[in-house]
Amino acid sequence: MQNNSKVPEKIGILIPQFPGQTHIFFWREILELQNLGVNVTLFSTRMPPAGLISHSWSDTAMRRTNYLVDMSVINAALALLRFPWSVLKEDLRREPREFLKDILLSLPAARRLARACKKEGITHVHAHSARRAATIAALAKVIWGVDYSLTLHGPMSDYGPGQGFKWRHARFGTVITRKLRGELREALGGDVPDQLYLQPMGVDTDELARNAPYQPPEAGEPLKLFSCGRLNMVKGHQDLMDAVKLLRDRGIDARLEIAGQDDDGGAGYYAVLAQKIKDLNLEDHVTLLGAIGADMVHQKLLDAHIFVLASWHEPLGVAYMEAMSCAVPTVGTDAGGVPELIEHGVNGILVAPKAPEILADTIENLATDGEKLKALSAAGRDTIVHGFSSHKGAETLIEGLKA
Image 1: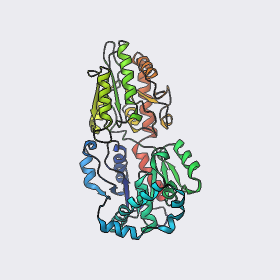
Image 2: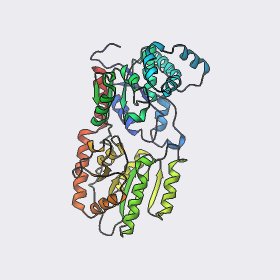
Image 3: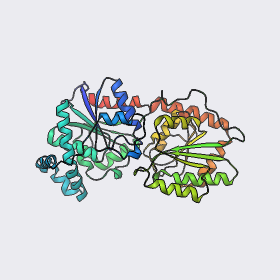
């Protein structure tokens, strides 16, 4: 496709295992693109496990999504016949064997993507991942000529080998934080596209709002804490539970609810956290809500006195954005890209990761400082409205398509 100032009439958005429990910001961005007049066709690698499908819009999204995983022997054979040896020769020589495996697994899906784009008149695909979705898009480009772009949502180490190949052939790229953008340029040098945009993940600030002012906890009232995030060790939920135990041992009636599920639909880290609740004798005070829909997340945020997510590492953090958009005083960790969102003491509070005692001290101090909580509430909301709306994310993609 020739670069010009006109956005393609039809574009594809490729999201791995869509719709997942953390994919609400993708859906918001898609709706914003449509509001801006862009015709969006959804693609994904495969459907998510049933335990992760919790959103009110999940069924609609799945009906709209073209799933690319194809076990057909014929499709795989025809794709393999187009293996781009000349293009991949140097990458295959430099990269570990895992890269070749990724290419072979991605080829059938790339063929299906290219055929769907040709049939639907789609001239550009944006891969919202730098892992296999990006490999699929890059193969569709070098073999079948489908124009594409991609987004880096986290540290490059999370997205496997072959990054040079994935980024080198892209028309443009987007990155969610300045920190990650610098790391990408340092690691890949000339393989990075000339156009590389900062595209923070965003939220619907009109939907994620309050209908009444935030109110701090009153004397004698239970302290209502809420957390939301995938159930995984790196999200630090276990540290937050330890902090709640410390608070209760100090005589503070802290109550914690955690929304989210593990990647196995409840058969993985959920059980570890459930056992920890029992070990700490917190059955009546800490609740695992599992995967819940956006409407219930919104209500839980409105009910909370403080939002806390104690991640060991967080590229940026949509859960923080949702809480701040709802004007909930927010406590996060000084890790990854979170400081690009939360300015300590101004629009939220940052603590060191893996430090339950410091976390407990921070929550205790906030719980007795109503004026500070109100100030954080207002400043957090203002930060998201002006810098992290889903509308801005959609406009960034359009800017890239016009360049």
